[in-house]
Structure formats: structure tokens, C-alpha cells
Amino acid sequence: MIDLYYWTTPNGHKITIFLEEAQLDYNIKLVNIGKGEQFEPEFLKISPNNRIPAIIDNSPVDGGEPISIFESGAILLYLAQKINQFLPADIRGEMEVMQWLFWQMGGLGPMLGQNHHFFRERERLTYESNYHICKSNENYRILHTDIAQQTMKVVDRSMKSFLGLLKAISIGRCDQRPQLPKYLPKDGYFPLIIPRIKVKDGVFKIPMSRQFKKEYGEVKIQLPERLKDKDIKEVRIHPKYSARWFEIEYIYVDEKVETSVTPDKAIAIDLGVDNLAACFDTEGHQFLIDGKRLKSINQWYNKRNAELQSLKDEQRCDLGDSHRRRRGGSQPPRGSAPREGIKGFTHQQARLYQWRNDRVRDYLNKTARIIINHCLTHQKGFLSLKNPRPKSAWSVNLFDSYYQFVCFPFSRTLVQ
Ligand SMILES: N[C@@H](CCC(=O)N[C@@H](CS)C(=O)NCC(=O)O)C(=O)O
Image 1 (cartoon, helix red, strand yellow):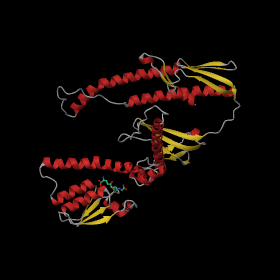
Image 2 (cartoon, helix red, strand yellow):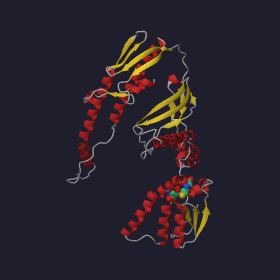
Image 3 (cartoon, rainbow, N blue to C red):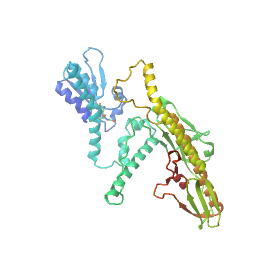
Image 4 (cartoon, helix red, strand yellow):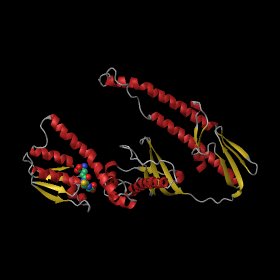
């Protein structure tokens, strides 16, 4: 006799249909997934990924101990072998069945599941309703609750703004074409948003679920000394370039600085490249902030990056061949397409990019600080900015030859 752990869903039906078709005897053991019975420890012993269907065959063909099986595809295969039906003995026939079985498991089944859910609802799931659906999901549970919720909120905001833009287009208030928020690539990384941290002896732990901690241990982070007295409201950990490194962002409330600036005292700033900022104010003060150093950082970066790029192109053939020879492999067949080279960003390029970004950011932060200090000292309450290309999302490209090409993120200076 077979015990079938079942609930009235398509995955459950797959097995009842098979059992009926094969005229096998079975007992139904209901697992009410709506009430969370799939998380009962007894059921998890049979189906460790907390999903129906699962079976226990109490009289397997080898006459041994009962066999327990989860995953509908594995169950169907087991049953077909048990009764020696539906699975042709010849390799071609067997593969015909296998490919459709795997297609159904990996392709059709999951897609129909999503389709059923989203199209039946016919509306965006609100954060609250999504939360109830997701909270029993294994991915949700492996994250710390705070972090899982923040992740869902980010997704919710992206969907909301996408739908908001669609609405704005439909009433003619927007002429852009918004893109549906994308899934992360397989094995992609998402920022970790930690809404509160507990700092002890200058160190805080990344909150993790018990299950995760047990498997991977704890991660502790030293809080930067200069932030030790700050009221940290949120910490964000950003994976960079497929988690080759992480950037930690601390969000805190800073003390309000009382100023005595007035709007009738103004400063005008002309942004450029050689002169990053030409500033003059209503009292006749004027000063220039040199941009040549920043330009040379960019030029050096572009030059070095081009060198690394051409190294990559050169290396790809040699590497491919020697690598193949070392492993005793054969040469590519004659007339085959040229081999693909080293694709993507190499570690060296990533380090170089980071080096450049750190310096540009530092330069622009200092620029903003000089201007702000001037405004505070001379009580300038009105700031007029001339951006070289006002429509260009606050960036400027002023040179046309390759190594001279410069793109400065002026917005960084502007938002300081
Ligand atoms: N790949 C699994 C999927 C099983 C599955 O998703 N089962 C759903 C019902 S159709 C379930 O038990 N969900 C409960 C849960 O996710 O907690 C299979 O084919 O057996």
C-alpha cells in the first residue's frame, strides 16, 4: 500500500491521476498547506522541502523497508518503474518520456503556478498580501525577518513605480517607456538592507536566521570609529560586481547645524572640466576649483582599462589553447567559429574601476565641502548652478578623442 501525502493542488493531482490510471491502492494523507501543515516535523522527515506531494511505499518491489519519496517527478518515475508501465524499455522511447517529464517539472509546472496566482488575482499583490504568501517560503525564512521584509519592500516599491509610470503614460503625463522590473540573474546578488543594528564594543552582527547561522556561522562588522556616536537608522550592504566586494552604507541622523545664511546673499557656480567649479558671489569673492586632477584620474583610468582590455583580447587564444593542452583536450575542429575570449569584467578591471570611483567620489565630496564652507562662512543662502548640459542628468562629456573622454558625475557634487 502507498501512503500519498496530498493536498488538492495540481502537483497533488499528478500523483492521484497516476495512481488511478495504474489502479494502485493508496491511502490519502491530507497535508493542509493553507494551514502550514507542510512544516510539521513529521512531514518534513518525508518531504524536507515542505511541499506536497510525497509518498511512502510500504511494499516496495525489493521487499525491503518502506521507501519515502518527495518531488512529483521522482514519484512518477518511481511508480512507473514499480509497475513497469509508461516507461518504454528502449532508449529512444525512454528519452521521449524523460524529456517531457523534465520539461513539465522545470518549465510548464512552475510557469502555470505563477500564471494561476497572478492572473487569477488580476492585480498587483500589495506588500501585505505578498507578505502572507511569502512568509512560509524557504527563501524568506532563510533570511532574518527584518532583512526579508526590507527586500520585499524594495521589490514592492519597484513594482509600484513601474505601474505608476504605466498609469502616467495612459493619461499622457509621461512619454517614457518603463521597463518591467527584472528578476535577478541566476545566482545574482541583492543588497542586504538591515533596518536596525545592535552595536556592542564597536562591532555589530549581521542579523541572520537560526538556520543560516547554523550552516554558515556569524558575520561581524566593525563600525567605523567616526560613526560610533551616531544614531544608525539603517545599514545597507551592496554587493559589487557579483559580490567581488561589498560596499557598506550607513544611514544615520546627523545633528542639525544652525546657520545664519540668507537667501539674498548668493553664490553662482559654473561647472566645467578643467575648472571643475568657477564660483563667484554677490560680495565679489571668487575662486576656482581645479578639475585637471580629476580629469587626469579619469584619463589614466581609461588608458589603463584599454590596456587591460587589449590584454584580455590577446590572452584569450593562448590561454584557450594551453589550457586545453594541459588538460589533454583536443584542438577545436577546423572551420569552427573563433573561440570566445575572456568575457566580462576581470578582477583587475574591477579593482581599477573601484580605485577610480573612490578617487572621483573623494574629489567631488571635497569640492562640495569647500563650496558649502564658503557659503556658511559668508552666509550665502542662495546657490545658482550652471550645468554644462542641463538636460543630461547632471553629467558632462566634453572631449571627443578617446583618452580625453571624461564623464564626471556632477550630480554627486550637487546633492552634497
Ligand atoms: N517541485 C515540487 C513542487 C511541489 C509544490 O510546489 N507543492 C506545493 C503545492 S502545489 C506545496 O506543497 N506548497 C507548500 C509550500 O510551498 O509551503 C514537485 O513537483 O513536487
